[in-house]
Length: 251
Image (tube, rainbow, N blue to C red; front, side):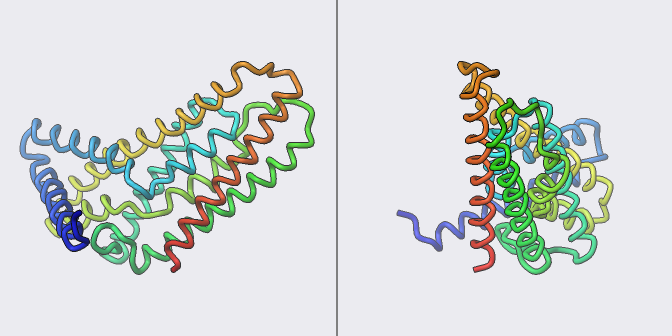
């Protein structure tokens, strides 16, 4: 079984390889058309893969769309807002402080404060959704397609508020090597890749929800009751997820 020191050494080597690849991509942009295209493709793929790592709210997004009666397009809209906020917060931190993340992307300083705020807002959004869901249990009519007004407001903002460590790496390198425009372009495609992965998660939540209720008459009382219970459970999941992440960072 590998030791903890060995794991840290492997993570450090991996981080150095990724950082080197990012540097090479930024350096190659603008030299040739093929070099620029390769760099942008690398950034797009990196964003999609990066969004699979912890810290991008995938479980929260899935839980939300499992409970909310929404169309697949709503998953894309929420993903764009999350990715945009995720990258923008990192850009702001780099611009203001130069860097705000320590080794392995663990938050420190201002980034840690923002992380605490992010998880706290997720809990608050979950509590609001839970209140709405419990109130809706008394209804005898099927709810119309909605997103509780939260998907366009607090929840995607709360999830995306956590600054993107990859954006910090890209922009720190770009600023140090006077390649700011290349860094911003690479950051843009990184955000698109992140949004694509999160949108896929949201769409899966919508599809799973529809599959669960495909055999139930949408005009019947069982449907209304089942929808209400699922919304309550999904809201509880959001509160629990936000609370667990919050406790982990404040300890």
